Amino acid sequence: MVKPIPSLSQILGDLESQDSWKGRQQLQQILSRWSSVVGEAVASQTRPTGIQRRVLLVATSSSAWAQNLGFERVRILEKLNALMTFNLTDIRFSTAQWRSEYSLIAANISESAILWRDHPSRLAHLVPPVSAAPVAPDSQSAFRNWARVMRSRAQHLPLCPACQCPTPPGELSRWQVCSVCAAQQFGRE
Image (cartoon, rainbow, N blue to C red; front, side, top):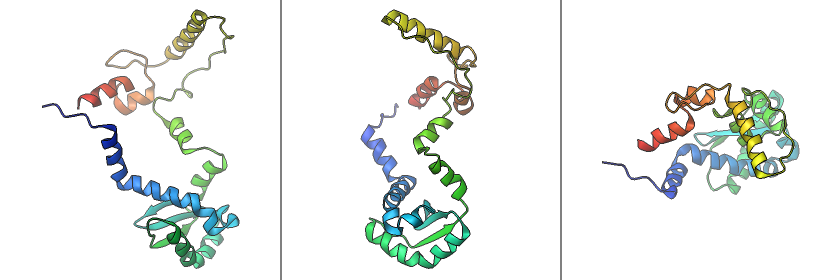
């Protein structure tokens, strides 16, 4: 018997009901209000990084900030809980995640940019740059230029064992096939 394909609304409903998704939404609520709750000076030295068992985890730039804010945590907790649709039970301040979390923020790298940078289909670090072609005067020339660039990029890639198409190594290490073949396999399950 073939399983029915779930609708997009069913998939989104399942996703939204997962605890990890709820945690992300709750953290987004806190992030959007953080500077108004603690003030700009404190916000520049702190960053909420997660929620674990209703305890807000906040990275701080130094142990002095962590210690001082520890004394203020009840006041901050009351202000946050008054603004949120959920209640936190405590706040923990630590320097543990400051470098990794804050260095990305300081560099203005968005979460989606990080995901794309690390995506298995990403080729930027593998493919030699292709010299820019002059703007094509017509659609046929534009297509030929595009095809030349694609052939140049694909010539260094390993082949998918299922369809023999050039495939980024990240896709092969993750799925053992290209993303197109992987999508077809997952669709049959």
